[in-house]
Image (cartoon, rainbow over all chains, first blue to last red; front, side, top):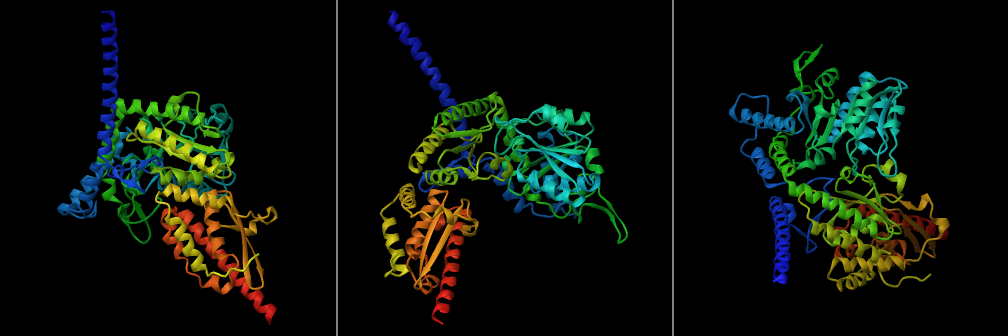
Length: 433
Length: 149
């Protein structure tokens, strides 16, 4: 009798485990079915797409919207009185509303459409530096910035005789707020810092950075290209002056970007580009500019893609509410850290003590193995990863001459894929060493 | 150093035949890696910036000797697959005359699928390597003409 009770209990636990496991598999499988790219095979192998920090794959709802915008609703926006133009404008503005709501911005005036995070950062850098920086002034960035948040400021600084200062990151990939406080001297006129580095995958304490900088009257621009994908961003809570990100990393089409800015901050900046739609009245002597946000949207914008923010961010928001997806992500972080740590010669860059600060993005080097070689072999196994300097040369060079290999996961990636990645890395190393 | 009696195209065809044995991409790469490992290494003193080829994701050094109207190459890279690719090029071009190099048909690279399979940065690297080899060939030709003249 005893035996039977034990058997039944064991069976019940096993069944529950199976159900949970299946449920998880089912959820992720359903998500995967929405992404045509994930159905692909490469070199006869099922594609494992681990280059999500570079760009995300697009769900069907976004692809459908894109097709509709380029097809039946195609007309230039904000201009003509005809029906098609009105419809296109409406979809464009719905895209803006979707972004506003996603990052909890106060109004549509705070949301500027650009072509990507790079364009957003160049816009701020160029307009701000030109107006507010002079000889000897500094822009404080961090050591872990993407080139778009380095070179944009460098170019602008060179024009006025200002220069960059870089806040260091420690061996865990974290910044020190004490160091930040020290470095914020009277020459620093603006802080431009990443929410999450595309190499380290560590969440920076942006809210604290903003509090410290604001206490000294210094505005803060955040590069949120990775941050907006992995954190629930509330720009009013963060209190940053600007938050820049790309749409294509969060399911929207390529060629889409956002610059969020506080109203006062944006109103104070001179326009970045001149052209149609950004003006109030134009004469050869003097032009007055349109109100926000159009002041910064010269020319015909990529309205077809911008309209896709609505389905893209709706998709992202749903994934965020999905507890199984969230749980899966935490499991993948723990699993990849554990497994990569166990491989001889592998070093992970950006490993905070608190794993909750780490997104599923792992940049590694392997002793005696060129990262490009390993990436090439993984490619033949159907596993897409990034290798090289990852547009963050100053940071990468600090640790490695040959660059790094990066695996970056998205909610549609499964544990099974993570396991195959680890097997692939081990196999690749054994071939190369 | 031996003069090459086969044309670059003939050597290229041999390579295509060797690669045709492997069906899996990973196996082709493993073979390429083996070739890379057996590449005669360039002298450390020749690993200078002058011999560095730009346009590759990894660093590649290529040096060249020109004797009796023939070219002889040595190369190295910090990435082993790249080394494998250079070893193929060297096998095709070593001991050839400048004229044979300048007029060579490199379709073997397409035939073994290397060009498609390599990332654009890498493919550019390949293009840069071939370009550098041809520059060496022109220099060798000029040197020969001077010697003869």
